[in-house]
Image (tube, rainbow, N blue to C red; front, side, top):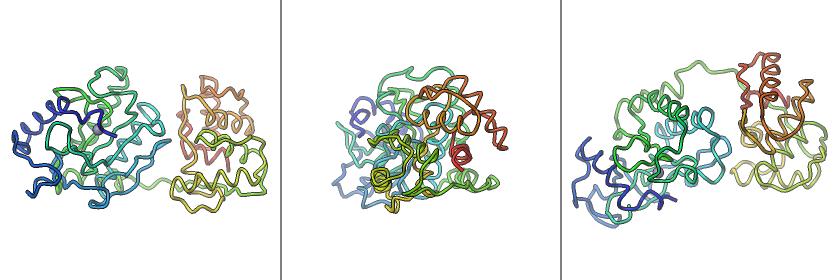
Length: 330
Ligand SMILES: [Zn+2]
């Protein structure tokens, strides 16, 4: 995963930052992964590092993306998940296969451990924002990224803000274990806001046919599964659902219930394209908010989505997230 930005030179800027911030790294002072000193198993930000079996990790799935090996369990997971979700909604949609979490690696050409080694860093849409390249985001996107980071109250740092070589794909926990700011932020994100009303999904299974099955088939295609969209939930659709459930570590029963729906839908909005957009357009038409199923989420689809959202008492932001998907398929 992180070979891209774990080469020796890109780390120099980061190392300087860290040393300036807390004296964590001293030139030549760290031993490698197999060393015996306690700090050998500490990543740059001071968190215990290790292989995926040695440190507590939890899976993370945001939008279309899953993070191989996950990220560190607990408050770090809450915070990095929050960053990834806001990035997915406000900056750009996360792309399947382009996002990374934990990876146990010594930085090439050095003996220090990347923050990915402790599960406290994520890379978002890595191929689009390669290491060392500045300006991979628009000004508007940078503004939104800074808004997300500043909401994290110093707990999260963006690689695009490194003073040295930029790493715009990269977000990391910027405080040490036990820092009160991390726990406070996690509480605020995880439990501080009033709980929104639960999302109610309609369970769909083999034998069903109609608009929900059509949507499921388009979403399966969006997720990379090949099948014909015919609105009939037969054995092929069921087997694709089972394969999808296995890929997400869900109960592989072939039934599209709340958990599978939640994993299957993708947040789409103006500018999105593809099978998930086709599904939304057909669902809107089914609900009487007619729009052509072009697969391109343009201004008409936004307008119709907003009208649908208003009609159902949802926030009329024109963005089709889980709550809107659930109302479209109820
Ligand atoms: Zn990274």
